[in-house]
Length: 248
Image (tube, rainbow, N blue to C red):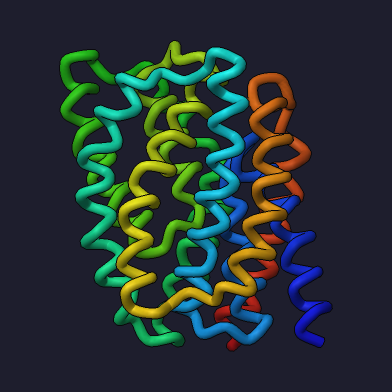
């Protein structure tokens, strides 16, 4: 039975790795799946991060190969995000399972609503460049706190922030920045989960291999693939899993 679970998680990893790179929100599916397969919520939270590291590593290679990585800007954004993510992770390791499940379900619903209404359409380009720079700093501190604690959907919040405050950013560069920032902060904050023994390494390896494959494919097509259909499927899946988590 455990072998079947690992095979299922591997398959989920391929799909989620692809989604995380070409769009965002794959972890909104991974975390509930890991929980449904019997992992405690904080262990599922830590395990998911190992897979994201593998997935992003392969995706970064593709972004670099395609010339979509702005290293200087990405490193600047990653500094406040990484510091904040450590505090978020320290908060997450002590959350009770039922509280985590409820928080995750609530943010899943928020995420689905944002995907539907697309607030960037109404705010994009509205900020004065002088205001946009400090807002980026504040936004990425909040993103770091959220990413360190829950992680699920953080790529969408990064993309939303960049689209609102840097309206002319090319899509390929935006996805590259998102991937680079997440890779840097998660490389640091994941140690909080490792030190607290909150990683299921069997599930992490299966999910990582699948996510790496999906992330590599996603990095190849992130700047060209239309994601409207993917968003619709993701919204339906997120709402479905959110309801199940709330019922639990």
